[in-house]
Length: 191
Image 1 (tube, rainbow, N blue to C red):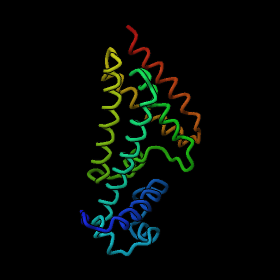
Image 2: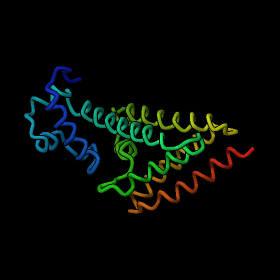
Image 3: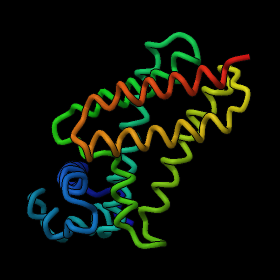
Image 4: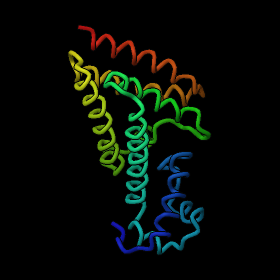
């Protein structure tokens, strides 16, 4: 692992370059040399900052997770009830579908490239656990009959929405995922 005392500016430049390249082109396709070139840092600074590509990939994915979590948690404050927040997760996700350069979920694409046992697996698991727990907590709070089942269904829908929006170049996929989420949620809450 890199040195905690490494220059913060170097870490930020490396992480910014890696984040852009890894998301656009893929974790495996982008070499460490390319990240060094784009970031403008010296090769020895990578070792001091991250220790190597694995830790840079870990930092990239953790930063994506943090941004996603903060965006959703902050955005959910706009919604009143637990039911509205469950549906709101899909509205918030849909806001990213129209962003320039949207390429789906960074964890899905990185996981699709990864070999078993790679660093991607651990960080993706952290993200997936958070996503499931988000849906489960909201489903439980909304008093869904089967909060675990609803959480699983909503995770699948969330993943599918991101993949469809990216692969089909359809930002309006958000309307479809929100409509399906609403139907699933209302069915799960019906008494």
